[in-house]
Amino acid sequence: MKDQDNHMHKTIGILGGGQLGKMLFYETSKMGIPTILMDKNREMPVGKIAQEYELGDFENYEDVIRFGSKVDVITIEIEKINVAALEELANMGKKVYPQPKIISLIQDKGLQKSYYKDNELPTSQFGLYDNQADLINDINNGRWSYPFVQKIRKGGYDGRGVQIIKSEKQLVTEGFKKDFLVEDRVEILKEISIITCSDTSGTTLSYDPVEMVFDPNSNILMYQLGPADITEEQKANAKDIAYKLTQELGIVGLLAIEMFIDINGQILINEIAPRPHNSGHHSIEACYCSQYENHIRAIYDLPLGSTQTIMPSLLINVLGIEGKTGPVKYEGINECLKTPGLTLHLYGKKITKPNRKMGHITIIGKNIEALKENYKLISSTFKATS
Image (tube, rainbow, N blue to C red; front, side):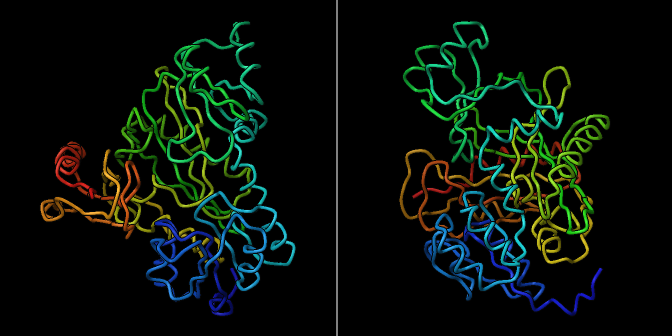
């Protein structure tokens, strides 16, 4: 490891000013690392607290080049970035983590699935389609049967761009028309996530798997438990898959790997994200070194911190409620904050919308069943409304 005193002055540039950028910025602030962020406006969560904040569009080539030219290390909080600009910055000698080729791969869910297959990583059966007519032809020829999962290849996030197709009528009226993939609908026993972190020398650590529970209609995470309630064998198998994928990619920084455990106990990769992830929020309170701090350590060539779990945790997403759009008002804060072991994270978004992520709550405690009871209480009393 190099003498760290020689490069602690290097500037990190973060593309994106949302809640993930805010939590990354908190870690660079703690360590005194010069940091600049860029997003389209100052109304983003980090825009209100960061002095070094530039206005620009991270999907625009010129804006990304202009921004990246001013910093030494470039990272992201969102995948929807102009990859051509990142490649050019890397050619200019800038350190870009995650690497542009990895971002390009992950921007396309079809390429993701093909990568798993090509590298003998377990995932559900799938097919790639340019148009709906070819899919209908395959259905008629017996390749697919209802219900199945349909996903747009680019641009989907937080459950958007994913739907379960149950009938021909639904496919014709609601189905995606072009550039999509189809997957077998897995009979899911549990959904888990593992976050790995790798430094520039290839050292990789992982956090304990967490168990995620999603809203069946919006496909947005409602809550998660950490560590996941799975067998030691399942935990070991999931970590082996996560390590293999991480090493194959050669990524520097964080990689979130969402997986299914099906009713037969088989573990399958669902999707991945090369950045801090919702399923790692709990690590701020529940682990020795959070995902955010470890990402900064990794891309800044500092030793990785311990990913060990200190105490079990429950994480609850604070979502905008249905039928409410407008200036946000929070109900139930006083009651919420009476809960032992609870930390409230509000992102500073002024406007609430249905299912918009407004914040999250982490509760740590020794008893998992008690944590589950806390979910019932918090979800019924704490609201982001207008």
